[in-house]
Image 1: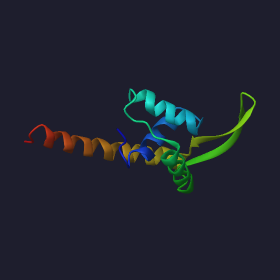
Image 2: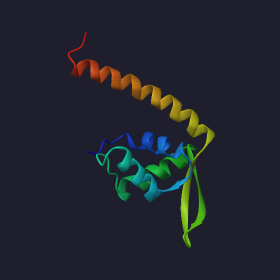
Image 3: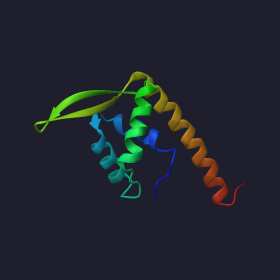
Length: 104
């Protein structure tokens, strides 16, 4: 399952826990979704770059196990966006659930 449009929100949520490199972000998303969400490099890195261009995340180079990796971290602007987007997601999810369950 690959829900287009959810990746930016998921990236922000994962980075709320601290800086990570792209592969680790993808692994966390996959693990937390019990393998249902599996975003590949072709969608992950463009989403990371887009979030960085919007000022929601920033990247830094770090050495990890002898390799230099680009790690991403949430900015203050990203924290505010995460809060707002989570609220929007909850509202949308509630509305969809109402419809799927037969509505009022």
